[in-house]
Image 1 (cartoon, helix red, strand yellow):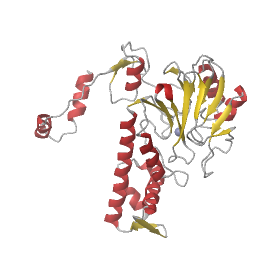
Image 2 (cartoon, rainbow, N blue to C red):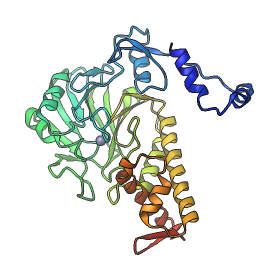
Image 3 (cartoon, rainbow, N blue to C red):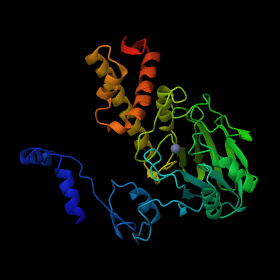
Image 4 (cartoon, rainbow, N blue to C red):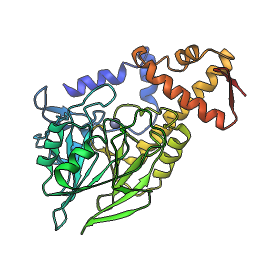
Length: 348
Ligand SMILES: [Zn+2]
């Protein structure tokens, strides 16, 4: 029934039969739909490439045995490779998707482990991380200091004695004030944690001024924190969030030699470069809408511009969208393309 379902989905976007046939007659590459099999709430079923779990299931279950889950369950560890475990916190929401991922990373001959993003300060989650890590935890890394990523650092440090690594944000608003790193990272460091376990540190400002991504060299896997999230659009919240910096950081990642992304929220993602390019294109599209909105409306009130630019976004998300709108406007102002007077924006 999946083929029927997918066929109906594919043809639903055409207004009529003629439009569908015209499209069907064009020469083009036909994408193959090769489902995986997974288990979860709906029982064992095919998982298609448009679903978030597909790439991860394909990697972890190439023979399609169907024993792995197409859902992310809090506290249930997922072994992603000999060097990587994922354990997700119980904080799923609109903003955090299935919850924040904490990643124990290690598996070298000394069997010592690092944890990337201990998540919120929840004792049950710290217990789950300790249970999931196959060996003692020696290092703690924070991708950034938003409240769903770093408050667990202090708790995990208290339980393990591991040193906390990260950066301090430039602006204190919405940050984890408890964050006290033992080791300040600049970006550019290369940390040999164990034989065959090397993390390189990349400073990727944008979502947060202190955002870091960590590249596990031996697996060409990038732990992206909230720089790239699966499924949802990353919020860029000025002043700590910076749209120009975000795009610059994404463009820099396009030239990294990567095969997988391990996001702060969601499943493993394949084809990193395509993922980065998609986000950049999406942001530039939104920016074009901002410019078109200002062109059409002249000097609109912020609320009117918001409704115009984010017409496709549900209204309940508009308070968040407003922050991204401002991020776009600040970027355009810095580029000399728009200006603001008494809270009213117009084209330069
Ligand atoms: Zn997050």
